[in-house]
Image 1: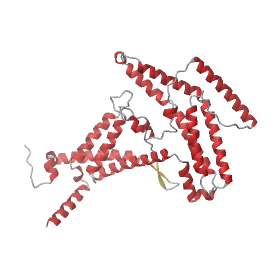
Image 2 (image 1 turned 45 degrees about the vertical axis):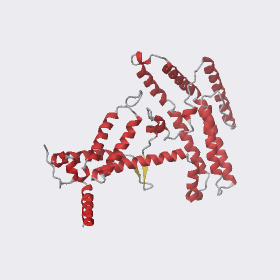
Image 3 (image 1 turned 120 degrees about the vertical axis):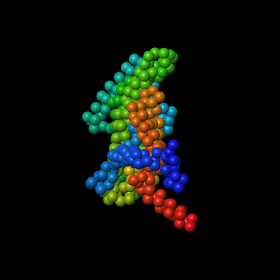
Image 4 (image 1 turned 90 degrees about the horizontal axis):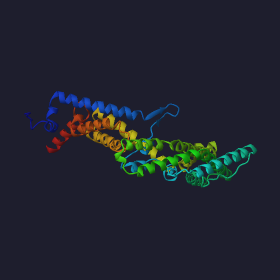
Amino acid sequence: MIETNPAADDCHVRTAWGCTWTGIVALVFLRLVVGWHFFTEGAKKFEYDSGRHELKMTFSAEGFFNGAKGPLAGFFQSQAPTTHDWRELLAQPQQMTPEASDKLTAWVTRYVARRKNELAKGQTTEAEFIEIVPGAAWGEQIREDWQKIAGQFKKIKSLSDEQRTQADKVLETQERNLADFLAEEALDMQDYQHQLWRLEQAEGVGGADEIPFRKERIAAKQADVSRIPLRWVAAVKKNDQYLADNLGDVLTPEQQSSPLGSRVETAVTDPQVTQLARNNLLVACVITAVGFCLLIGLFTPIAAILGALFLLMVMATQPPWVDGAKSEFFYYQLTEFAALVLLAATCAGKYAGLDSIIHRWWSKRGTTKGA
């Protein structure tokens, strides 16, 4: 039986093994290892731009949010930009019948020929998103959102009439480019929606649990199909940025360097993108701060709790019992989560850490007040 001294530090009373030097060394070592891991992972998310003399983010949680599985997937996915509601408007199951396929193929052939003829003659026509194109509804939503951005830009009072006209031309060009892009990808989008339809049919067939590995095959196929639209989403994001850059180029150099330049940047930036940037910065700062505090033993319980909550959030996005979840990192994260809980429950920061100084200062302050 281990004896404890009532007059000893309260930490020694609660953790009997902590009174031994081996326990202390083990706690400090655990704190340093976990702290170093968090600190280095957080530091990787920043990069110093020597040209502008500022730190830049090299990390985005968008893929982390979009790839979430399980019961909380909807919540995590809502934290990422919707990119003009592509999940609701593009990721829709649709059977590809031979008639529908032939009809779309004929339309794409005619569209490509017409556009080549227009470009050769230097002609321009209004962008169109007809119903037969699988991405038409998405295209209409993108155009509507772009029109709102251009409208906000044109409302800026400092702009001249000529600049507003130039903004209209920028918007028209982007809309035509978008229509061309959707036409070029129409057949692949049709195939993508057909694959979604086939998965929907496969999931609706009874007896899935009775067929060996059937659930695993469906989950693997779902993972493969879910990656297909990402290239289209990435392309539209680039077009979003092109629109913002081209509208910014409408300004004169003097306007760009003035406060008007910041107003324009705010007007042409998607609020969801701005919110994601804030989330990215928050995540990177929390991870780095947790690691730094654990390394120097400062506010160790608080840092450990924050680190544990972060890991809990990460694990919640890929629970291993959900089909299709990426569980290869789950158990190492669970191990580190347990280590953080241990650090939070003990006085790990009072050994070889700044928490010992704070503890002594607080104890002396309490003694002085009591006197």
